[in-house]
Length: 457
Image (cartoon, rainbow, N blue to C red; front, side, top):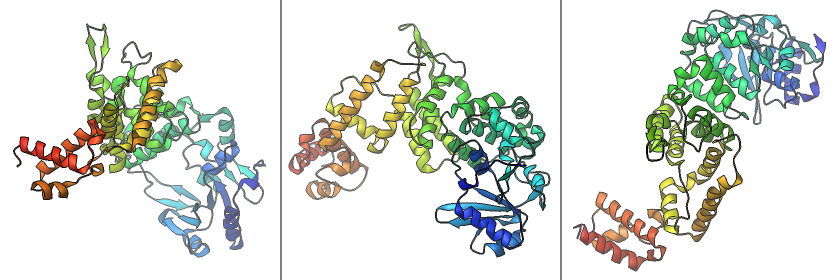
């Protein structure tokens, strides 16, 4: 142990938790990601406390704490928006289900507690009274080398808990570390345990990974170790598959570049990951162009993305957003008319426009190591054109029409049903072509004409 930790980084609430435990005669240590991040010079996102106080003692010490995992000795102390986990020192038995220990045993030795943790950089503790560092597995050296190494035998660690393999991939991206060779080699032999990880946890790890600068680092690990073949084999279809003359990268590498370069939240970056998932199944060689084509890969990709998102338990809203973006990511602006722009907005939905700008720019940039400024000119012109059309306030949805279904039923005697909905859709199309038609008298006249032609009157 040595005193190398700056205790000024620790929030007052955490110091208060430690003081409360000490006042009751218990010892406490700072552990987990907060210690790891502070030691590598990154502001910690959270702080965890380990203690020799038993679960019942924790409930007495912190009566307002949330017993988030009391059977494993964990309570959560809440201070405003901040949550701090306080956990009894423990060792663990075998993991029959590949996710959780069959039983835990509470211990008094901090080293025994650290020995159960996944990676050496996460198995460092700090004595909060002095700043002394407890590092029995040489985690600080691994921090300095930027290496992710399992605690003890990596095959044992990964065979115990299948989530650890996926966490390894995620940390490679979020910490920008490399897996040490024995740790990387231990994933493939323990994939049977990885298969037991729930789809919800896979989704959670994917979304956490997407917050990194280069999430592709994690997906390369998932690919190389066999994890991706289990969770999303569709993505592997593009590995090594050449594209057309506009792309320097294969389908897989282009997807990685697009995901890394997509500016936005985690769900948007999942859409970037999947945006070309349909290309391998639509690839065909054209004698006319002497090049590869991928006709309708956006439609096929959307049809593939939907079950992928469902399989990985994305929420309904997340799934709809991802599928919509995959379906509509492909557009080629060439001095469209205002009507064409209005139809595009109607098709993709106003709520998807900002996402599509980010995705399309990442798609263009992901075609090569570097692109010309002119490559982004069509996108910029389209953004300007769409902004002008939106500013005009023209009708872009049935609800924007100057008449509604009740008006048509009252004035034309049309009955409720699919025919009425189709009539309103046709009116919207006429207004999309010419916004000046969006006034009640003209719309009613058009509606009468259309209804008569369709035999509704």
